[in-house]
Length: 144
Image (cartoon, rainbow, N blue to C red; front, side, top):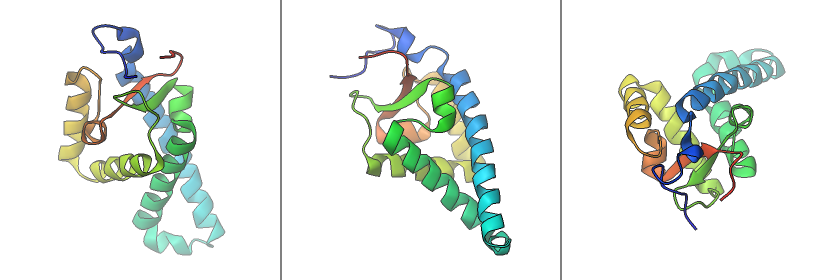
């Protein structure tokens, strides 16, 4: 079974860009809180390695949430979930790569711009990491 094409069933992809932005903001807040907890737990020694700690926390958070629930906390609130184009729930390795590619694209401006441009132009509203991995976000309330 595969996901319906956006022309055949646009409800699966309605408002995804806005929902992805909302999920991004919520997940940013969650990540900040988690990083602050790590800083406190390490008596602020982790501050010397903040970029590495931040990346590790963000990748771990996204990977665990995506592989367990198909969505991060922000995605759950925004009512979206990650799926392969063929409709399958992504396995842990795909979720890890999704998180790593996302985190790497956040470091550089060009991949981030490319990701937003892809969301605006691809039929499935896919970001750069989605195009690379063959995944997309769909509205969670729809069953297929």
